[in-house]
Length: 364
Image 1 (cartoon, rainbow, N blue to C red):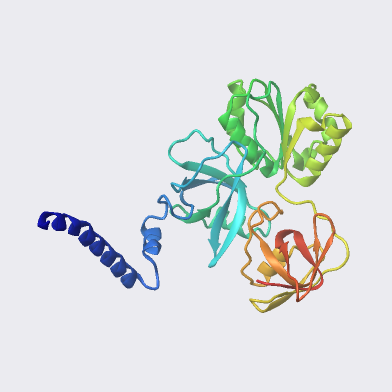
Image 2 (cartoon, rainbow, N blue to C red):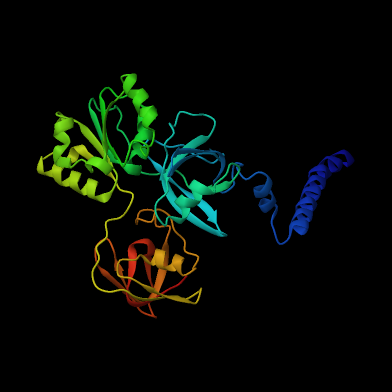
């Protein structure tokens, strides 16, 4: 019996030591938890919130930058053409933006790349272009998106892009060797065309037919003229990405040709319907009041007024910007519909695609 009692005491002693160690850890890290210290020293570990560490920042053009990121161990990979959200701390405020992944998914070192073009007044894109440095930690979301290729690959593919719309397509071109691929791309000038040297190498290797259009001289190629540079365009599965006028033009042209099902579109910005007037927006938790214009998303109006606004894709897809409308009315900028709440019944709205329609109160 004495022998049995001695054996039974060992697990009890081990549990006591373990529990005491945990209590000590909690005591010395209060008000932080031990997990907070692990996040400090092992931010990319398995089980931690998904993060990435910037390992390289390389200029592509005078206004575009490629960022290489070492993803955390929770990264589940991506399909060519997908995008991810990154959270960047700018002046003490975490802002979320979505960017296409330009690297192939075949790497086993957990490295991915995004290419960001700075836009006028773009807080995050200009921060990435001018201030982001290797070693910076970013918050990440998993890759999402349906702008991808089927399996097996189509026999004939056409890519119709302009500006930053080239980025998801570049992820595809780096990942696949298409049987027959044509890229029609519009850029302001040769110097401002991203990936130009690499694309020309693909042409030399027989992997791609490239049609360049420099808009400072010639303007964007109208969809109705695609047949002049790609005679068999009707027979090709087409992936189009770029500014809204290009995509709207393509959708109309493909529909009129009776082959709308052959066109696959990726939009970076929501199409807005602007009607009526704006109004005063009251962000109640922050106790900030600001005037919102009829075409101004509440997300932008709040950020400009100094309110900490949750956000993500900024085009109504990811629902990262949802907040309660507690009083008043807002307009859905995609449809023009009016959404109204009362003090007795709040309504969840997406601030990135909603504008003030008279006075309104938002619980932020």
